[in-house]
Length: 226
Image (cartoon, rainbow, N blue to C red; front, top):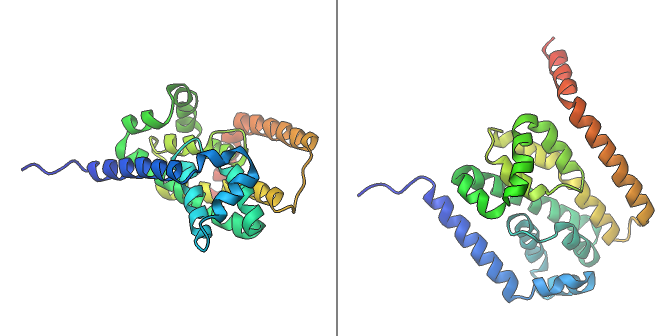
C-alpha cells in the first residue's frame, strides 16, 4: 500500500477548518450580525462566559474565512471588552491566522491558493511579493488599503522563510487593528477628514517606499556588513 501524499493531512485540515468554521458562523448567526456594531457586540456577548474565547476564534477565522472584516469585529470587541483586551486578543488571533494560511498555502500549493484568492488579485500581487518580498509585505501589512489576509496566503507560495514572515506579521499587522480598538473603545475619535488625510499620507509614503525601498534596504545591509 502506497504512503499517502505529504500534503494530504494539510488538505484534510484545511477542508475541515474552512467548512466547519463557515458552518459554525452561519449556524450561530454571525453573518446576520454584520449589519451594525451593536448587533456584532450582542452576538459576541451571547457566548459568555466564553465570549473572550469565541471572540478570539472569530478574529482568527477572519483571516482564514474571507470576507470577515477583522477591523469591524475589533471595533465590536473594544465596545464589549475594552480597548486593550480586545486589541491583545485580536493581535494574537490575526497573527495566528496569518501564519496558519501561510503554512497551508506552502503545504498545499497553487491549487489551494486559487480556491481562496481570485486570479485578478493573484496576478496583481504575487509577482511583486516575490520581487519586493519583505519591503512590500511590511508596507502592505502596515497600511489599511491592502488585502492583508490574501497577501498572507500568496506569501506562502514564495520562498520567504516562515520565521521572517512571522516577524513581519507581528511587527506590521497590529497597528491598523490597534486604531480600530482605540476607536471602538472610545479612546480615539478620528473625524472623516482626518482619516482621508492619513490615508493620502500613507499612500504617498507607500509609493515612495516602493520606489526606493530596495535601495534603502541594500544600504542598510551594506552598512551592517561593514
